Picture 1 (cartoon, each protein chain N blue to C red):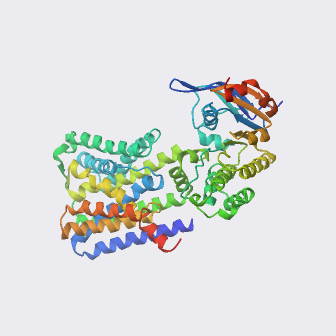
Picture 2: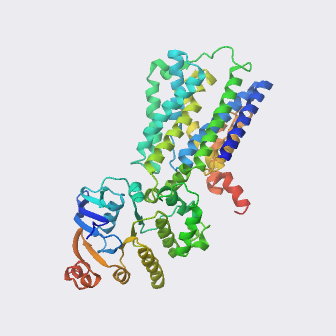
Picture 3: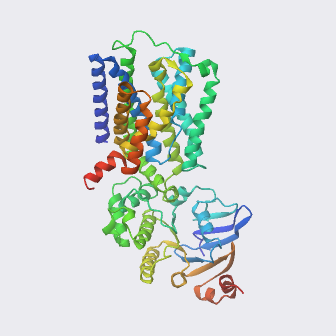
Length: 311
Length: 240
């Protein structure tokens, strides 16, 4: 209990630091890039709750992210709802989708589950492309609300994403250290044995897919205001699927720290490459780093550190 | 006679056109040492999967402690006290031996969330002779230690009925005696045990009563002596 309180305090300190950074009004590009990196902290952390803790590899990250984004687009179109409502609604709708794919785990395991989630992403993208109200395949411009704090809307979104990242990490950390996390680890190791040892595997899997989906939707909800032009190809971008998987793998999937390390390192490298070399270098970097890690350090940076300490 | 601890009544299970179990009925009394034997493919493991909840039976009823559990999911049956070990050990590979026991203690034990978890796990490991390996991962265990972990983990679930599915296959003669001694001790503590085994020396020495399955049908029941002399059993194993 005391540790949870401490984690929340650390989280609040991080949010405060983010706000302080926003008030400094440094080079606007830093907020712009920082937003993307933090967004990946949320995405990687959310993915890891299902992929790392429960061992169900989700290739459909873009579906959940884009569903959050398009829920926001729909609400902006229909009611001009404020940002907190967009985030809550995006999380809720993606959580429902997560609950849905949770029932898939009854019949699909391993690579078949992964294929199903990939298919889900494609199906959803096709549906959005044919839905004119949210812009269809042409996409849609979104007007940001006027008069944001901290002078610019991107700077404001940066602070929002700091808070969302902190929430996501605290949720992941709580799950990992509770009985839920231990049950998920058991079913990841051997689902049949876990069930026979009294672990309610279906319930735990539904919980993991729902929470993971919810956080992915939350990450996507501010996206329309960030880019101001939403179209299916960018919202359903393959980058999200690859990064969501690569970042935890590189950082280490067994602890909440892993996805954070992976997202910060890989996200920063990608942002750097985008400005210094070319925007096409993004996925190339991810690919090379991921292959290197899978071959040389399958347990990620955390595993490397543990090995060096000789534990 | 009091009501049996486990009542399997007319259980049927088929996979496509293949009938794995055909109206199997058997009763296991509380505190009994019960042997289940039969040639390969006779339906022993299917029966166990139906009793433990891993498979749903097509027809028939399963009662435990007088309660109908036919449609209960496996983890609920574990909490009621039906615990099985696996033929091929299925340890939680990312956890230490001690943590492996923590899962059933937390999820299946009667005292969920109480602080004595680690002490209880250590106690079980001591009883089974695995305490020296408590902090190793399963990958560092030998074959016999793996079987012992399987039994220790089952013990941590506080079973009333322990189903031991070929816990001794592939072990040496001395190791078989080692496992047998553990099972005898558990039975002496009041745990009912169903033993599925191909090693006749072990199952005949252990069981008070034996049921023989062949091609999904129950062909014989009796004391080990009666079973050995039963011509139908001989035919099932050796042919005409």
